[in-house]
Image (cartoon, rainbow, N blue to C red; front, side, top):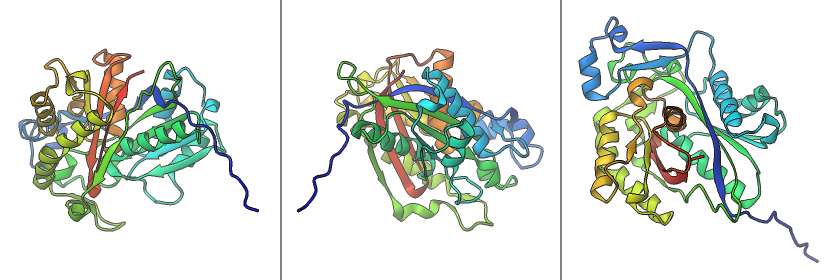
Length: 329
């Protein structure tokens, strides 16, 4: 006789309960970079929009940054670490692939024994991890999850390579997600995601002794033509119009890319007062950390408020991309 399996009843959906971020104390300006490579402030800002970026101190680990951001997000959610039953870390810059980051972050938070796994979708990592976490909560497989995006690019970028050293930086951002009630309804919309593996080599690390390689112009053309339709699909899947978006939070890759995406959405009906995240100006490109870190900074400075509709759009190496609409806590 075959047995009947029982599954946990699903809930109405998932919501973001709190956000947090961490950046290393050291700030590297364009003027400082100009002392070691052939560049200057005007050249950098005109091409990528970055004025400064944060870099980790000697001995400061990706695990340390991820743990600090996660702890802040848990506090912002009004929870304590033992309320969390799953830890997901999105990253592509761990110094080694084994052991993973998430189990060590969980233990550092004081919640040893919970579910823990890493996601590597590079700069789209947070949006991928948020989608997976939301589905885990919605299905009843998890109750409260901390999703972290954390990167330490100074381990993987050649400091003398002008094409990458001016762009990439270190930091972490996090969000806590939990179940939505029937009265609230879902606060994290369906994900629209995909990949373009035929272009995988345009952002790559050849082997464990190599630095990051990026074909900037190719990535720029791809992002400015392919990503806006993905963002619009995510709104459609969530039952929203472009005019419903209060805050646009793309991966902080390049200010010109961000402004191009905002312009495309406004042509499709987004409001002129839609707020565009510009965290890249003083944070640089922090890959999987950039979206949650920007959210935390915008919450802190008041440019994003509780209840706002935010459109999150991740894209980068792989090439991978993902987008979803969320309600801010």
